Length: 120
Image (cartoon, rainbow, N blue to C red):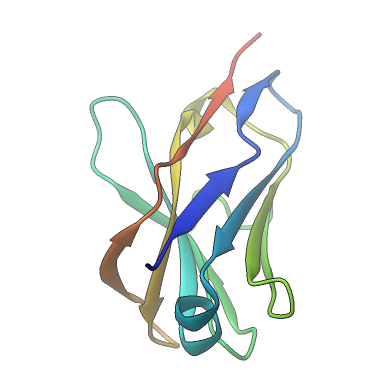
């Protein structure tokens, strides 16, 4: 059974940092690009960042310069380091598997999400 499990969310003050993790089943992780999405209340789901099997990364303009996506292929785990967090980063963050290099296409495979709340 293929699974994606996110963790690392929480409540953080503006300007703070968080590192999100996504643990994935070996087969789905090693074969595909991986991505982080987020959905804020009342908004559409947004692609935050993705990383190819080879480590090429791409970021949404809303997080560029504040976020770093990475993957550890030995651990089948992906990370999202978020710095200088803003209230508008508040959302449920989801892990996803997919494909692409210059652009990203998602498979219909999602984790349960992890809540990130940025508030003073």
